[in-house]
Image 1 (cartoon, helix red, strand yellow):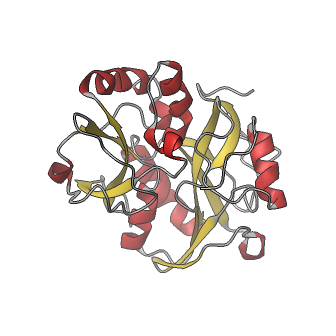
Image 2 (cartoon, rainbow, N blue to C red):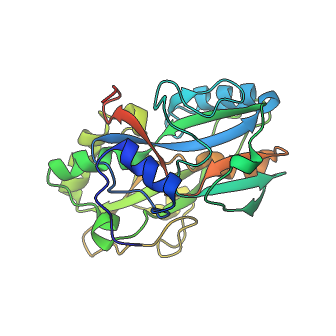
Image 3 (tube, helix red, strand yellow):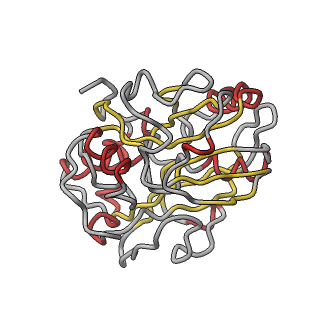
Length: 263
């Protein structure tokens, strides 16, 4: 991961993405500003996905939903452009990943509805304020993310497994991390699982499905939070004809405070 630039606000991060000066993962950028996962779908698939988010609020806590064709999320960042204000995107056709561009302006259509979903990067600065270290930030890499055997609640055409992110802690710090992150329901809230990764279908922590592996030291527990990359696993199962998402770890940084209000 490239060394972090001094990007202190959501606007600064978005501007750097739009200008092409930042194309990497966003953990550690703009502390105090809420980060968001992106899912863009044709309007005739949007209702099913909205219902999916409502039925699965922990992996898919909604921050904002646009009108069809709109490029700015009016609640989260009304001056933004979702076509070019993220570091990197993913383009999906029939559930298959076909491209990872830095700009999707050329793919935008009037029938596309955009969903912004809360991200656990939002609460990392709060973990640090409570003296809890965040391993992937210290390592200068992306957070590790894993598909699990935890099934999401189906909605219409959408179904599939929950994805989780992992941060390791000694037991006492794991308890404190639960307490801290429980106050952030819009950013996935408290963990969904502690320890025993095999119990949720994760066979090798050194081989994440998304992001980068980080070491888990002796005496530490892997602590797992629901992750907003879950929709990407669900897209692979539901196979909509067309979709756009963020590239894992490359989030949309909003103008909202990490507690949910504007800045």
